[in-house]
Image 1 (spheres, one colour):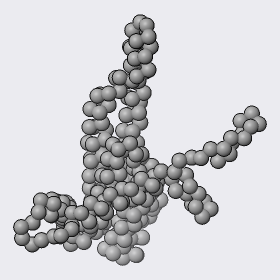
Image 2 (image 1 turned 90 degrees about the horizontal axis):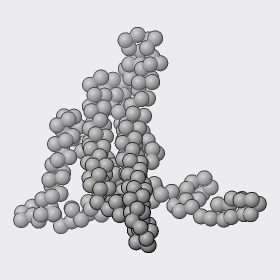
Image 3 (image 1 turned 90 degrees about the vertical axis):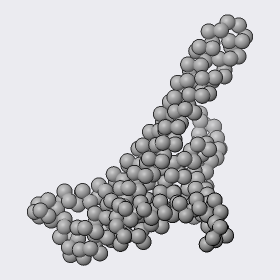
Image 4 (image 1 turned 180 degrees about the vertical axis):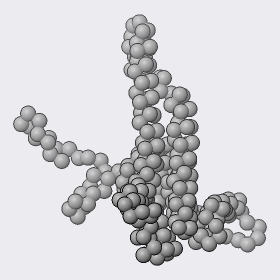
Length: 252
């Protein structure tokens, strides 16, 4: 990229910003998303390798426990007829969970980018709409926008469009807020460390004030909530809303 400062031209490169085929670009969100998919794929291959009927390993027992948990979650909330949704919901939950927790490694979470949740929400919204059409037919689906009276049609359309928007923004807002709060805490502790240690007279105080000592310990404790707890809960909530929306669409 080229910029001009006081007439002088400066060239620099942005990380994870590689133009491909014109306007198509590979950014950090895409790169980390691919890493997440590779991690999940590798884990699935490892867990399902060398399966046995008898004398199963702890690895296979863990894999069966995960499959049973996903099956119970979907069937328990949607009913037996939606058992075919288990792979989709499991994939959605695992992708969301790993994407949320990958920030612990220092990588930027893909879910801190609204485009990630927007893509997931569009997929979920498409499945909800398909289920409504499957249940009521195209005519019944379109007629639903005119209930209870025709004048409510614009509001019903807005309500329908609000579903994917609320799904995306809820997940994105919670993950991004955690990242912002963690960043503010780190910055505040660094400033506090510099101010407190700077009170020590002489070269010792000058040296120690350059080291953000207070950034050690407390941020790690807060990370248990903002990264681990929030990451797991947001993945669970997103999947719960997904299965509830689809199940409700089948009843209309």
